[in-house]
Length: 123
Image (cartoon, rainbow, N blue to C red; front, top):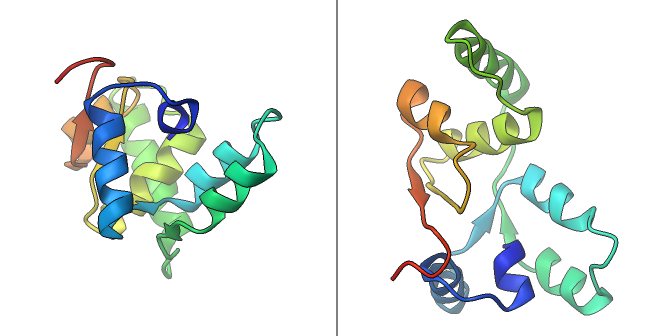
């Protein structure tokens, strides 16, 4: 989403743009919180962001997040809390994560999170 809002190019940005056009884009609540924390976020971008549907936090979510992080810690990984929150939201709703970074690799291999890792500029 950061790349999308910055007007960058890449397959991930194209996917976000298409999902928005099709009304299929959803965001994890933790992703919304992270995006709203950018101090340079303009009011118009904030409004656009808040119009995107968010995944619902379901009963037992916080417990599942804790267990998910514990699983990764047991495998000597160091999952960030925000990434764990995002991963669990996507797992709960069988939704893939579209990302440019490798922070979700452990979730992918150990928890079967669907991850679309797209490098900038990769078509």
